[in-house]
Amino acid sequence: METVYLKSGEVYIALQPTKVITVVGSCVSVLLFDKAQKLGGMNHFVHPYATLPGMTDANYGEPAMRRLLREFQNAGGNLKTTIAHVLGGGSHPKMNDWVGINNINVARQFLVEHGIRITHSETGDKIGRKIIFDTSSGLVTVKPVGS
Image 1 (cartoon, rainbow, N blue to C red):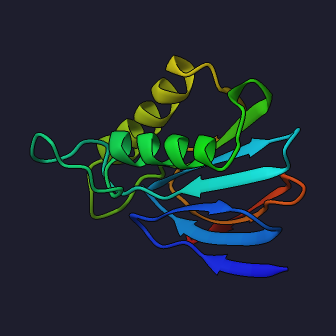
Image 2: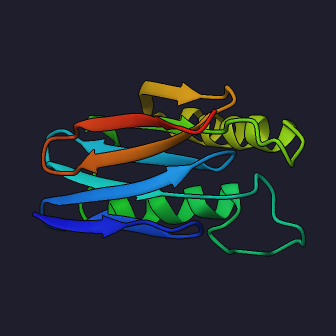
Image 3: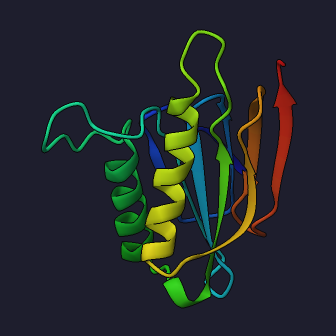
Protein backbone atom coordinates (compact mmCIF):
# COMPACT_ATOMS: atom_id res chain seq x y z
CA MET A 1 0.00 0.00 0.00
CA GLU A 2 1.28 3.44 -0.94
CA THR A 3 1.84 6.03 1.82
CA VAL A 4 1.27 9.76 1.23
CA TYR A 5 2.20 12.51 3.70
CA LEU A 6 -0.29 15.34 3.26
CA LYS A 7 1.03 18.84 3.95
CA SER A 8 -1.00 21.94 4.75
CA GLY A 9 -2.70 23.41 1.70
CA GLU A 10 -2.89 20.03 -0.04
CA VAL A 11 -5.79 17.89 -1.19
CA TYR A 12 -5.36 14.21 -2.04
CA ILE A 13 -7.75 11.76 -3.68
CA ALA A 14 -6.64 8.13 -3.53
CA LEU A 15 -7.26 6.31 -6.78
CA GLN A 16 -5.70 3.17 -5.31
CA PRO A 17 -5.42 1.88 -1.71
CA THR A 18 -3.33 4.44 0.14
CA LYS A 19 -2.37 5.33 3.68
CA VAL A 20 -2.68 9.12 3.95
CA ILE A 21 -0.95 10.71 6.95
CA THR A 22 -0.97 14.26 8.24
CA VAL A 23 -0.54 16.16 11.51
CA VAL A 24 -2.89 18.98 12.50
CA GLY A 25 -3.01 21.42 15.37
CA SER A 26 -5.33 24.37 14.82
CA CYS A 27 -5.54 23.23 11.18
CA VAL A 28 -8.39 20.98 10.09
CA SER A 29 -8.42 17.91 7.89
CA VAL A 30 -11.62 16.63 6.34
CA LEU A 31 -11.67 13.04 5.16
CA LEU A 32 -14.26 11.79 2.70
CA PHE A 33 -14.93 8.10 2.15
CA ASP A 34 -17.39 6.67 -0.37
CA LYS A 35 -18.30 3.30 1.13
CA ALA A 36 -19.70 1.95 -2.15
CA GLN A 37 -16.78 3.00 -4.38
CA LYS A 38 -14.07 2.47 -1.69
CA LEU A 39 -12.79 5.91 -2.58
CA GLY A 40 -11.09 8.21 -0.09
CA GLY A 41 -10.02 11.84 -0.16
CA MET A 42 -8.50 14.23 2.33
CA ASN A 43 -7.57 17.89 2.70
CA HIS A 44 -5.56 19.90 5.24
CA PHE A 45 -6.24 23.60 5.62
CA VAL A 46 -4.67 26.22 7.87
CA HIS A 47 -6.97 29.24 7.96
CA PRO A 48 -10.76 29.43 7.93
CA TYR A 49 -11.03 32.38 5.57
CA ALA A 50 -9.05 33.71 2.63
CA THR A 51 -7.43 37.04 3.39
CA LEU A 52 -8.36 38.55 0.03
CA PRO A 53 -11.50 38.06 -2.06
CA GLY A 54 -11.11 35.48 -4.82
CA MET A 55 -8.25 33.55 -3.21
CA THR A 56 -8.52 29.89 -4.15
CA ASP A 57 -5.55 28.51 -2.23
CA ALA A 58 -6.32 25.22 -0.44
CA ASN A 59 -4.72 26.63 2.73
CA TYR A 60 -8.09 28.32 3.31
CA GLY A 61 -11.27 26.57 4.45
CA GLU A 62 -13.82 27.16 1.72
CA PRO A 63 -11.44 26.78 -1.26
CA ALA A 64 -9.96 23.64 0.35
CA MET A 65 -13.42 22.16 0.86
CA ARG A 66 -14.59 23.03 -2.67
CA ARG A 67 -11.46 21.48 -4.18
CA LEU A 68 -11.76 18.31 -2.07
CA LEU A 69 -15.39 17.87 -3.07
CA ARG A 70 -14.77 18.62 -6.78
CA GLU A 71 -11.81 16.24 -7.07
CA PHE A 72 -13.61 13.56 -5.06
CA GLN A 73 -16.66 13.68 -7.33
CA ASN A 74 -14.47 13.81 -10.46
CA ALA A 75 -12.82 10.58 -9.28
CA GLY A 76 -16.23 8.90 -9.00
CA GLY A 77 -17.28 9.71 -5.44
CA ASN A 78 -21.04 9.69 -4.88
CA LEU A 79 -22.20 12.00 -2.09
CA LYS A 80 -25.15 9.71 -1.30
CA THR A 81 -22.78 6.96 -0.13
CA THR A 82 -20.08 9.24 1.30
CA ILE A 83 -19.27 9.85 4.94
CA ALA A 84 -16.98 12.49 6.41
CA HIS A 85 -14.55 12.84 9.30
CA VAL A 86 -13.63 16.27 10.68
CA LEU A 87 -10.38 16.33 12.63
CA GLY A 88 -8.23 19.03 14.21
CA GLY A 89 -9.01 22.61 15.11
CA GLY A 90 -7.13 22.48 18.40
CA SER A 91 -6.02 25.51 20.37
CA HIS A 92 -2.55 26.77 19.59
CA PRO A 93 -0.54 28.44 22.38
CA LYS A 94 0.71 31.19 20.05
CA MET A 95 -2.60 31.85 18.27
CA ASN A 96 -6.10 32.87 19.24
CA ASP A 97 -8.50 29.99 19.78
CA TRP A 98 -10.75 31.47 17.08
CA VAL A 99 -8.57 29.98 14.29
CA GLY A 100 -9.23 26.38 15.29
CA ILE A 101 -12.88 27.02 16.15
CA ASN A 102 -13.55 28.78 12.86
CA ASN A 103 -11.69 26.08 10.89
CA ILE A 104 -14.01 23.50 12.46
CA ASN A 105 -17.11 25.60 11.73
CA VAL A 106 -16.17 26.16 8.07
CA ALA A 107 -15.66 22.42 7.52
CA ARG A 108 -18.87 21.38 9.26
CA GLN A 109 -21.00 24.03 7.57
CA PHE A 110 -19.71 23.05 4.12
CA LEU A 111 -20.43 19.36 4.72
CA VAL A 112 -23.95 20.08 6.01
CA GLU A 113 -24.69 22.33 3.02
CA HIS A 114 -23.68 19.50 0.66
CA GLY A 115 -25.60 16.80 2.53
CA ILE A 116 -22.51 14.85 3.57
CA ARG A 117 -22.93 12.99 6.86
CA ILE A 118 -20.23 13.52 9.48
CA THR A 119 -19.67 10.17 11.21
CA HIS A 120 -16.52 10.98 13.16
CA SER A 121 -15.30 14.23 14.64
CA GLU A 122 -12.33 14.84 16.94
CA THR A 123 -11.92 18.57 17.19
CA GLY A 124 -10.85 21.33 19.55
CA ASP A 125 -8.96 20.79 22.79
CA LYS A 126 -5.35 21.80 23.35
CA ILE A 127 -3.70 18.98 21.41
CA GLY A 128 -2.42 18.26 17.96
CA ARG A 129 -3.40 15.10 16.15
CA LYS A 130 -1.60 12.67 13.88
CA ILE A 131 -4.14 11.30 11.40
CA ILE A 132 -3.71 8.05 9.51
CA PHE A 133 -6.37 7.33 6.87
CA ASP A 134 -6.59 3.95 5.13
CA THR A 135 -8.45 4.78 1.93
CA SER A 136 -9.14 1.12 1.10
CA SER A 137 -11.28 0.56 4.21
CA GLY A 138 -12.12 4.06 5.44
CA LEU A 139 -10.39 3.27 8.76
CA VAL A 140 -9.11 6.38 10.51
CA THR A 141 -6.59 6.34 13.36
CA VAL A 142 -6.06 9.52 15.38
CA LYS A 143 -3.16 9.84 17.81
CA PRO A 144 -2.72 12.82 20.16
CA VAL A 145 0.41 14.92 19.65
CA GLY A 146 1.64 17.39 22.28
CA SER A 147 -0.57 18.90 24.95
